Picture 1: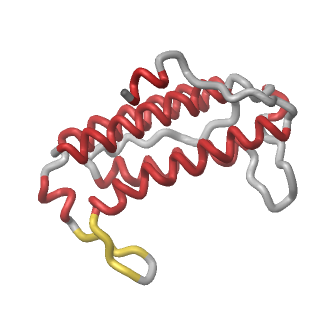
Picture 2: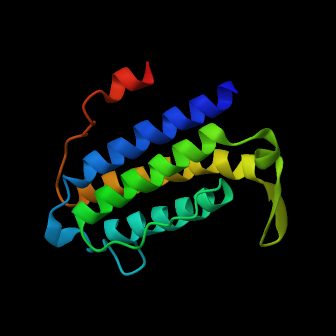
Amino acid sequence: MEEKETLIRLICVTGENLVFNLDFIPDDRFAWRPSSAAKSALEIVNHILENFNHLNGLLGHNTPEPPVDDIEGAKRALRNVLRRYEQGLRHASPDQLSASIQMPGMAVTVQLLVRMAVIDLLHHHGQVTYIQTLLLDEESHFAPGFFAQLD
């Protein structure tokens, strides 16, 4: 399925770029919130881990990544959870993807959740890079090979 490969590529490239961008947040600012209503980079990473742990369970990988509390742990956990997601999606059968899951207020297919995961990761990547700008980092940072992986 060509769509699966596109989703896998987007998750891998975005995930690796998010991991790369964590290096531009000072350790002592990882848990910093821009306001009381905003999430810190730490909270964003743990939210991503929670989402992908759930998706990985739906795709047959029931080894969740625990919450993290530092940048190095976050980078390791993100790589692990996204690697499991890639493997699970790559091997997911059409029956697995068409299975219906009950969400609050509606039923959705695993395939829809798999698609939404890309949007969710892109959204949270943007939140983390915005936090960098609030910390006065005015550069855009792209992981080595970022653009070649999109080609």
